[in-house]
Image (cartoon, rainbow, N blue to C red; front, top):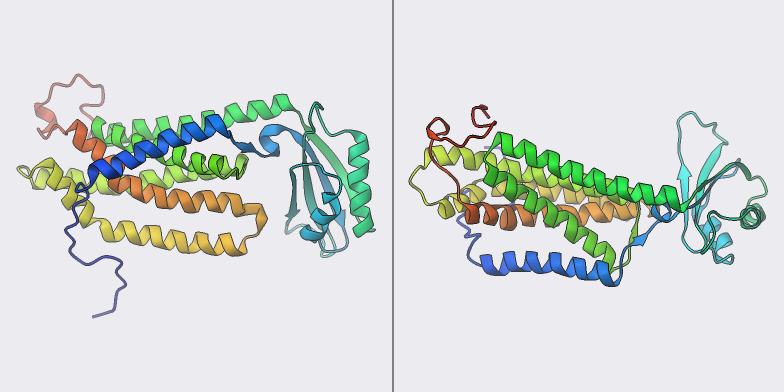
Length: 323
């Protein structure tokens, strides 16, 4: 028989509700601490949300992000982000970078004098450098981006709620969305507590976490729906435990393989994507936790109507949909 890697035994009998008050209480506490951290520290918004100026550079010499950053450090410009741009259409001697400078206090955009200082500092370390374009993002645009980011996360959450409600039961939808909100809020709390830069790439990571977490939860709920038919007399708590144990190997394998890839990216991916990867790393861990200890707890609290759908009179417009 071929050897197979297993992260959990073939048969497990873990009681995921044994310490339900502690695990669920810890989740509630983490959410409350997040709101407290946001109230006290806020978020360390990047240029996308604070406004600033982006300078595009081109050179025949290779881009050295460290040298560029060191050259600009003496100007005390605050948050400066330097990103090398790669494109298959570039010439072999065409090296492009984007230098993003945060908006200065009391100024709509970076002043022409500051831009000239930046260009002079970069020319000192790379005489071949040119500056094809300069673009500014004012506070009004950046505030619109904040609202757009909030709407994107909210729209994703509502869409998932509707999908799970149609496909399963409303109790499953509530449990799933509670777990998703928990994952997003706690991840944001970590960024607030440690003042890690929060920009549009982190919003993309939050949306990706939503997709990962709901996939993990739906797998368990899909097996639970099958088991509700097979084990009609088994108490719901025991059935939830039984289902989680049945899918535990798959849950751990999915999380582990994802974490391996993300860890490699975190170590070798460079500064440009490190914030995104960190958010994903934490999101995968907290998403796996919430699947096992938050979503199921909500379903157990709400209970599940185990009568066949045709015998119910719920009045729901989705009652006759075959999932």
